[in-house]
Length: 391
Ligand SMILES: Cc1ncc(COP(=O)(O)O)c(C=O)c1O
Image 1 (cartoon, rainbow, N blue to C red):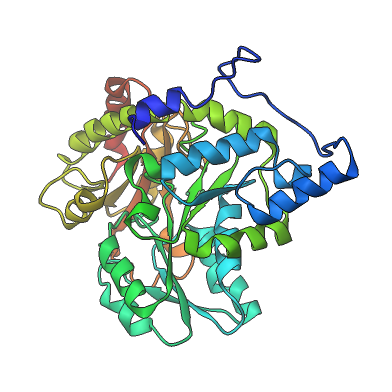
Image 2 (cartoon, rainbow, N blue to C red):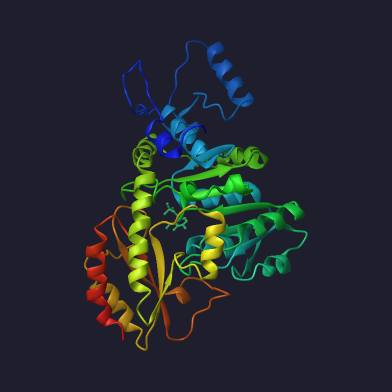
């Protein structure tokens, strides 16, 4: 790309025929052709070049979804980017494109909990075995590797506990063993980390989060390398997992300001992390302090950090963690993140699947904060007023 991403995101579409800076919202199931030979020609084009965005039938996409695919492929610097109706749909598409009965997958222990259930329980029903590795000790990948291993699946940073891993080491190991690698890159988005460029084969982003940015739409993307493209498009055609044009339109609207919002989330998050790191009973799980191991592996690969962080809180009384969270006035309590607003949750990690490498002492609890776009002074005041509840 010869222009900065910031500029690219503002100039992704211009149509001088309709005099529109925005792509049209094209809703259609049926696409019509002048004649049968016209229809057959498009079918042939689709077979020859399935990345081409040829208009044949609504389930394969319309002009609106093709436009978003194009924007994301540029942003990801990938071979292609597939769109799905939710971020979890992209996780599913990734796994079902690659894995087959009797295969094994090596997967990071701190994982978005529905992904954990999918890999640990559901895949078993297809005779696919998931083995978990310790994000703080990548030798556990080597230990779990067998000749049945087909894929290493990473979530970075780790879900809730925010470990950053040496991604290059994982990619080199996989290349040596001739197996594939996938990453859930929802936390950073390709604005801060481009997984396909550094050697991953598949990269998932929940578009529900920062792409949309306004907590009003759900979607997912799966960027891929050339090596896996054919397998993923086949699985997408077999499952019918596609994003609707309306949702694609809203995600495209959000994505124009992705850079501006992410940088503001980052600025606000750093301010809050600095404030909270001075508190005796709180460890901030966010890559902002140079002396931490997490910082080193973040710095090695990422160009920025988003608004999601963990707080490891050490208190005698577990109920006081709920009281702290409940008393926050500017932080909503609910799932998802990546929208304009701040959110806080007390994450009961022990109840969210069978974590094998969890470093939490008896009196330590995790609160997840999503730092939104509000004035950080107000957020700090709000947190400061609630800290008295931690006992
Ligand atoms: C890291 C991560 N990956 C994937 C997903 C799934 O995304 P969606 O809610 O769009 O299905 C989530 C949702 O919270 C997430 O946090």
